[in-house]
Picture (tube, rainbow over the protein chains, first blue to last red):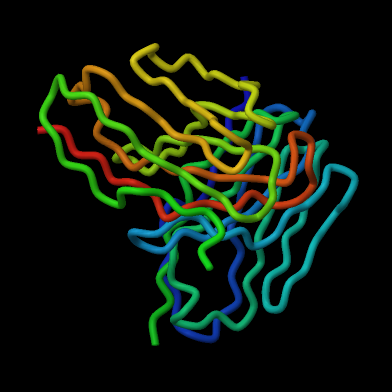
Length: 110
Length: 114
């Protein structure tokens, strides 16, 4: 059974810093991997989706990488802003079975 | 123009009652999902429907019964509510079953059992 782990569980950084969030998974036979953001009391907002054949995806200040063979993905956030404060979740799609990590709670201090 | 909408947003009820949560998506997607997020923020898939057909049922008690009247709606009915059912329930949709398009989530329904 797929297990998804996110490290660290929480992160607090000053504004402007570049940071990396980590996601690891145990079964490398994935269809895709998705990074989400969750704000308090809200649903999940999709940030980036990486297909199994891809190595990375970029959107603005966000860059997600995927190393399927080692079971790892990272989300890189450049020049962090207070508005980036949220919980970040990664989700692995094992051919229509979705497994989520428990998230990294990010706090960006002004 | 909410893409995935769930009602109600909050639901407070007594143990043993029966309740329903409704979900609608206006994205034209074929696949819809129900997730449960527990107090530790773990999200677990409960059900997945594709074009009104059940494709995933993840060891959920049979007190939970999803119903999909059409591909734009996936409702969740819960019988004989228990304390352990307290959680946030999220509805989501995606273009189709094996899609490399992102899932879209509703804002959640916070269910509290007294």
